[in-house]
Amino acid sequence: MGEVHNGVGASTLTDAQWIKAKASDALNDCVEVAEVGENVAMRNSRYPDGPALIFTRSELAAFVDGASNGEFAAMTV
Image 1 (spheres, rainbow, N blue to C red):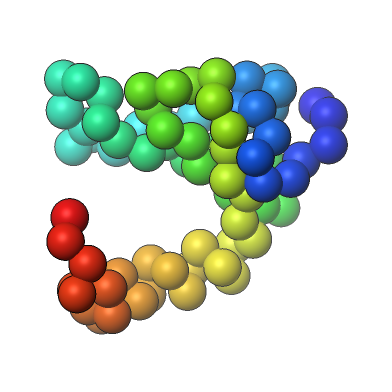
Image 2 (spheres, rainbow, N blue to C red):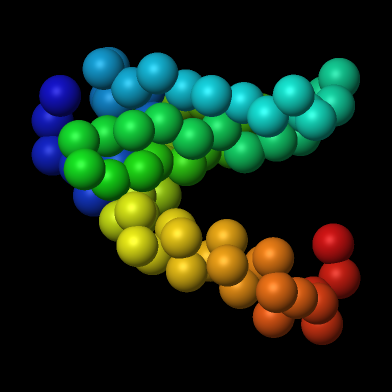
């Protein structure tokens, strides 16, 4: 596996085992995640060869906590 950084091509993360949520719809509108060393990679399942965002586990935990607590409720989804 090459250098791991934000924006790296997801297809270059050859050891990554991508996981898609069961709630994904028929158009694959879902984010996929994979463990990449001590970090977590995310990619758009519609573009599996596109860029991956790389987060530390603590960054991802802070986001999930904020989303669970409604901190991003002002955003239209």
